[in-house]
Length: 467
Image (cartoon, rainbow, N blue to C red; front, top):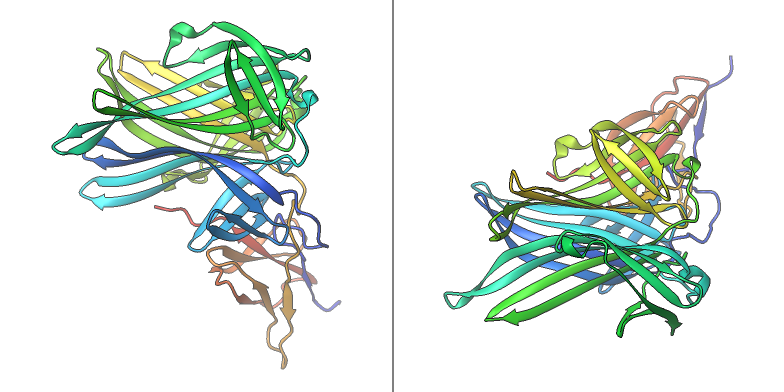
């Protein structure tokens, strides 16, 4: 009988350790963030801070990143990008071409007595192009999405009281023609439905690497295109005063260039989806909109070739929902993808590179005096182990005097690690407890070998759910 053989799988799950390569994430990025922070006092929801920000972040090939005065490290685990800063680990979904990422999150603090504070954000990042924008990249059909969140600051008792003014979505379909003209149609506008169907046009040109569109003398400049040229992110902040009241507006824009064609094969596989939902109570008499609830979600969508799929919740405000699955059906409608979940249809606009899609959904039920706004994006997850991963040093220490061997690995503080064991490289079993990274090397004692060959690996886990 052969002696047992202990083998190390030289890979962290979802991460290549065989030779350095230039990670596709490396480079300069812009990411747009729409953030809503509010307090819950009894049944009342009071807005604190509402903001739409465009920030720069630089991912370096050595696995570090910097944004503003903050910095940290990044790496891939289970095809997700983990961005690690002191005291914080963010799980970010990046697409197959490595030029887009998405994530949504919420910070919740229980103040006791049923009161709380909550900050919810939705983020879309694009890798900045290193070459000048070309006419070929611009020409084609685009969809412009915008979500707007408004508030009012009113004087009260020598101070200021902030109230909700409303939420709105709009979608405009734009065709940029090769002759330097464009045509556009407003497809939806929850704030002003009377404008739906309006058609307008103008001219466009590329100036200084930016796209400039002139619609009857009103010129807009579009700057933050993805390196693939099929996605643009932007934010807008506005404030103006009317009769001592300050009206505040925060807007997040997405421009998605549509593909020439879309087939079933373009969807089959695993996608990550992230976004936020905002539910409002509506005064049917015209008295305004009042926040009822805000939620966020990150899920995985497994698209199958037969038009069915499974959704699995990865992160959610409700910890009990994490890991839950539900089935959906899907179909192609032109160059868009329609998902049907529990009888509700959601339409996603696919990007030209076919690994990013965006969706807005608006539901109004004036019978129940409510409105609901969904703002989501999804990216196709990389299906190749080692997507952008820099080498990691795994070491097996053979102890003397017959003691069991020890597996060690360097770690990142705040990240969780799990040793797994297999006899066939297919069926993996957890071994020992989940271990918290310390920023230093951690160790795991290995057991007596159960078979002729035993394989071990470190698995990097997502951050623990926040209650």
